[in-house]
Structures are given as C-alpha cells and as structure tokens.
Amino acid sequence: MRWLRTMKLLLVVLLALGANAGCDDLNCFDGAGLEAKYNEGADIAAAENAAQFEQGKTFGLSLTRADGEREGAAAGYSDGYSAGYNSPDGYDAGYQDAYDEGSSDGAFDGSACSSGTSDGYSDGRSDGYDDAYSDGYSEGYSDGESSGASDGEAACEAPEVARVAGGGTTGSLALVKNRMKSTPSIAPQPEDHADDVDPEEARVCYKRGYDDSYDYLAYERGVSEGKRLNPEYQAGYRGAYEPAFASGEIDGIDAGYADGAIDGYDDGYADAASVIYDDCYSDGYDDGYDDGGSDGYDAGYDDGYSNGYDDGWSSVTCE
Figure 1 (cartoon, rainbow, N blue to C red):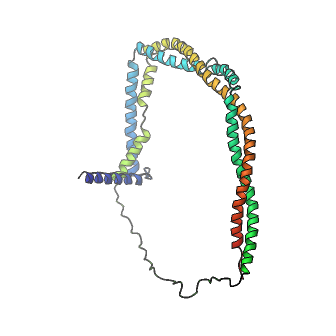
Figure 2 (figure 1 turned 180 degrees about the vertical axis):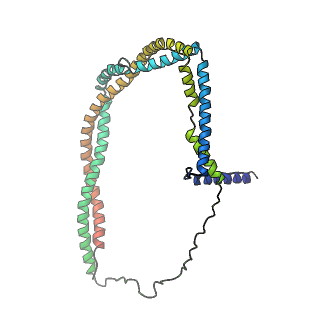
Figure 3 (figure 1 turned 180 degrees about the horizontal axis):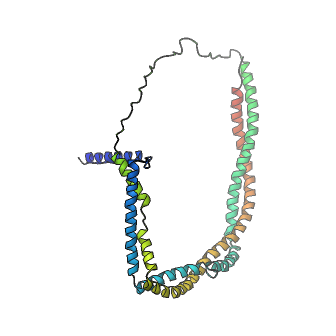
C-alpha cells in the first residue's frame, strides 16, 4: 500500500501549500493580536542578533598576533594581486602590446575573404529572390486577375448556367429558444469570525517579524569588532599586510599582462580580418542578389498569376 501512503503525503503537502498561499497577503500590522505576534518574533530575533554579535566579538578578541599575521598576509597578497592585475602595467599593457601584432597577422588572413564572399552571396541571393518574387507576384497577380475575370464573364454567357439557390426560409433551420432555465443566485452567507487570533496566522506573523529582524551577519560583525579592538591581532596583521601586498602586486602584474596579451592579440586579429571579410561580403552579396533576382521574379509571377486568376474568376457573378 505504498502508493496510498504516497497519495496521503501528497495531499498533506498540497493542503499546506494552499494554506501558505492564503497567507501571502496577511496583514500583520492590525494593531491587535497579529501585530503582537510580529513584534514578538522581531524581539526574539533582536535578542539572538545581540548574542551572536557578542560571541563573535569574544572570538575576535581572543585571536593572537600569529592569527593577525596569517590573515594579514592573505589579505595583503589578494589585494596586491588585484591591484597589479588591473594596473596600467598589467592587463592593459599586455592588451595594447599584443593588439598590433594580432592586427598585423589578421590583415593577411586569406580565409576571411572566402568566408565573406560565401556568406555575402548566400544572403544576397536570398534577399534578391525575395525582392524579385514580390515584384513578380504583384505583376502576375494583376495579369491573372484580369484574365480570370475575363474568362468568368465568358462563362456566364454560356447557355443554361446552373443556379445554386440560397438556403430555405422554412423547414431548414430549427430555432430553439428558452432551452436553458436560469438558476437563481444564492446570496453569500456571512462568515463567522472568531475573536481569537488564528493559530496559523499567528505563526506566519511571528515568522515574518523574526525574518525581518534577524541579522545573518551578526556573528561576523562581532568578529570584526573584536579584531579591531585586539591590539595583538592588529599588530600582527599590519606587520604582514604590506610585504604580502608587494609580493601579490608583482604576481598580479605578470598575470594581468599575460591575460591581456591573449585577449589583445585575438581582438586585433579579429578586427583586421573583419575588414577583409566585410569587403568581400559586399562583393559576394551583389553577385548573389542578381542571381537570386532572376529566379525569384519568375517564381513570383507564376504564383501571383495563379492566385489572381482564381480571385478574378470568383469575383464574377452571373445575372
């Protein structure tokens, strides 16, 4: 009977979701019981925040000079690396130095022209076909409509043209009325409201008050405050930060220059090759447009003539 237990569990979950959905617009500031529960949750969260902050502060005050040296070295190297990487001697210098080299190589990329010609021809042929098709369709439709109307008039002059009578006025359509009886509306019944706060609504407002006031960083803020007030930790931190910063800055410059050189070369190559591509694309487009136009006009004219002929024929009414 595992499936039965599963269905029961699913039903409980759905009911719980429905209850929570109904609480989304709950007013927890009603000036009465619900607001009291909200404030209760907020007060509990504030008390926990204060306790967490004090715990963190105590930990920060307990740290040693060695702790400060270790963390100062790590922070100094990280800050120095970032400063060096983003300095004028880092990424930007590598980018600029390699861009010119990439541009020079890209200017001799033979595949750029062949790719541009091929892509241009394909796009031009498609556009030329569409434009010519539209022109051909319009002219073909006009000619076909005229011919269809002319042939339709000629058909009307033939003897004994069959007539299709319209629908009869009696016996062909049954009109049914008053088949549906109206259902009298039932006036809504007034709801009973209990004076006591609903337990589920109270729980929701309590949680909202708690969540709105709870500080997830209270402990970390306390640790920072403890470190700030800890002279031994501060002495170790400051003593290790500057040398680590200098070391990190050197490594950051080297890494930034290397990354900039890769990106600069690639961009320089691509920019130069794109100039060749664009020139050859334009030539290929013109050739493709002309070829596509010669095919598109004939196809458009044929389709337009056929549709115009049908519409011209249908527009004729024999008297």
